[in-house]
Image 1: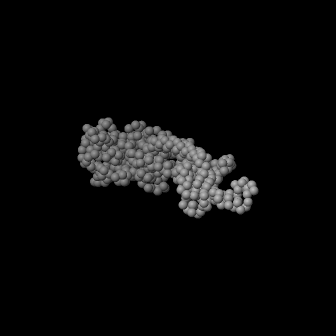
Image 2 (image 1 turned 60 degrees about the vertical axis):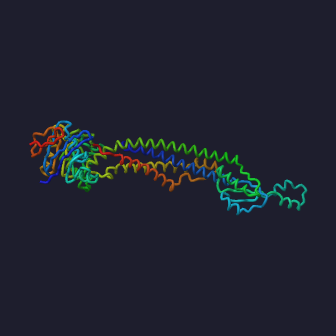
Length: 270
Length: 223
């Protein structure tokens, strides 16, 4: 029980840090995946008086991924009320050219304005439709969501850091006496602080293991998968190798830093 | 005879304005038994603290076991402390360790093998008559028993010098006598130098001893 109490406070603090970190990662991945989806379905419509050279445009404006000419057949079909074939061909030549521009990624409103400006700089491009109202609303909603989650994650992080500092004082008090006695018998610093480092490494590992189990369960839960499927995105919720390494690294770093602060702050009693 | 301690113009203080020991000159032979007495607050514990390097000289020189303690480095101080056995009035046992592990401490620090460590601890527990208390923690023992554990810890690694700060201050007669017997035994049989800070020198002392008295910050030998 005593040993359990020794571990629990730091383990809880470390699990909170790992939890907020992984939640932030999941949200970031979700937003990026959602942006990719949006970029796939999003395109600009450009009206030009002349036929455009797609290669030239994609070379000059790097944000563009593809340029596709829209067929005027649909419009002509609507107008086709007894017009001769020859006149239709003439009409096809005189009608402005419509293009659908795909982008490499979902742009910010500022990036979108820049692309629009660059396109309008071509003398024969007369109109660029960005559907900016819908685009801006979607983009701002995503940004708001990301910001809310970031604030939440940072708040958890701050509260946890305060908790860790409180824990640091308790540990300092608890370990000072032993370290002092060992010092009086000539124990070098590494030996005096060995127990402390061992405890902090064990706690870091426990916190990592707890977080690993939670997120492994979370990522394989059908309910969670269904929620992501409902919004049409597919992401790696928890990468058992990459995310685990990050978690273990963060947990060990925080824990060892805590122990190092105690060792550095230790002063021999006079 | 070799000198284990040499103090020359030694001054000790906790703060700049209050000198506790003022320009003391004394030396202690290796293998001797020494008592340091004085009234409460005279500076006898302060002098003892300086011998194991917790308090550094503000002036003069203090050499213990060949190590100059004025401006001593941590590495040298640790080296010296490995060869000292210290007994404190408040025992200074690690509460979360069993009594065996407390006794083992200097042996672990000095890098003794596990088998030697265990047999040494068993033998010391018999010496201090605590073999029936194996596996217990310090707070489960009486004050006298705790001091006997501290005594066993001080003797564990056959130190060159034992420093004891009022080792029998709060103890019952049985434990006090046992502590004195152990200190005398270490001095007589192992030729360990023993320095004891105390208010009263026991009348039952069997070994020859030197006596220093501290008064008004000065250290005098009582002949």
